[in-house]
Image 1 (cartoon, one colour):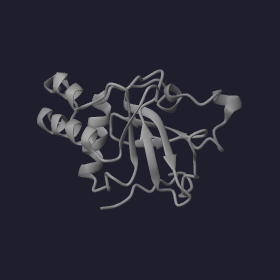
Image 2: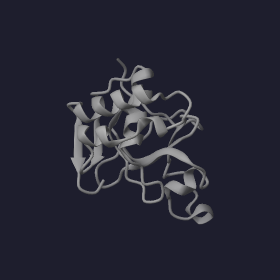
Image 3: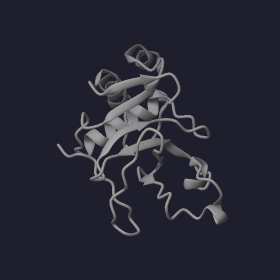
Image 4: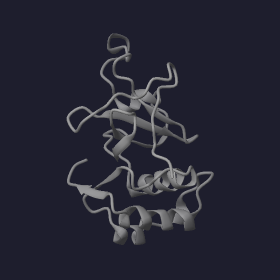
Length: 159
């Protein structure tokens, strides 16, 4: 299985390394397109501070948060920390399913969920209420259990 190696679409350059103090913001839109903010070329004077809602111009998204990358552009961690979009455990299940279907190595990076996100939380969700093309209730329920049981799953009080 493949690692997720991120490159910027506009110039094909690898996403630069990040650490816990300086992560990259990401958004995942309804078309399953993943956007990682290039904070070097982001026009702060024109657009202001980088915020998740600005990446998709306020449009709905499947998830938003922070992503962490190594020297080679390989993602080593992802969380669901977005004050505007406030992703829930369903976002982790959808992303896990999408990455699994895309052939990525699901243990090559850390999945960072919020405290309280667990397999028990997966059981409380009504997966049939989610109507997003490409995701079925059965697959999302399975993915929720798989991601929360993944050996690289981490819970943080406030991601």
